[in-house]
Length: 238
Image (cartoon, rainbow, N blue to C red):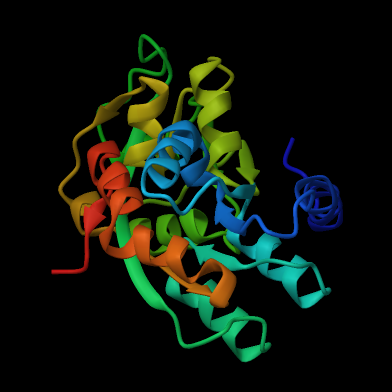
């Protein structure tokens, strides 16, 4: 069952309170799709002399809601431009932001493909357990755009972040879901090739205050950027 917006916001608020242990350490608000690569990102930032950092991972919309409510942060990264624009309009970013990397949607199936999924159309097939992100979440917004006019999704769950959805797929609680390809790869999930989804991409956008500027620069062109490219993210800086 997906968390309600209020519960998700409370979880993030508690994470912020726990993370803000050292005022000299940059506090990074990042989408949950970056969480599987926390250890590699930590190592890259430390080796570059600009870490360690403190992380708060959550759905992009939850991160922005916390900033609007007054939560502290030095860096904000969102998984799409729409959510970043909402933060920018609310005055909780430090500039117009920069695109960092991109991600692509993938049709991922549970281990062994128990639903016998062969194409995107199976998301509307009766008897198949389908999971997507909620439409207000970047991965959910992308899923709606990718499937519009092609299939009506009969979803059994709508998750507030892509990590929760990937976890349910890996555990076999769902047959199929639309997740980012990087999350599917990190979880070792099989993906079903689909030409439509090759065009279903989203740009991650970030902004930082002076205390987080070096961290954000690393995400754009430095060691953190290299980590994400190795993980399967797409380069948008060339």
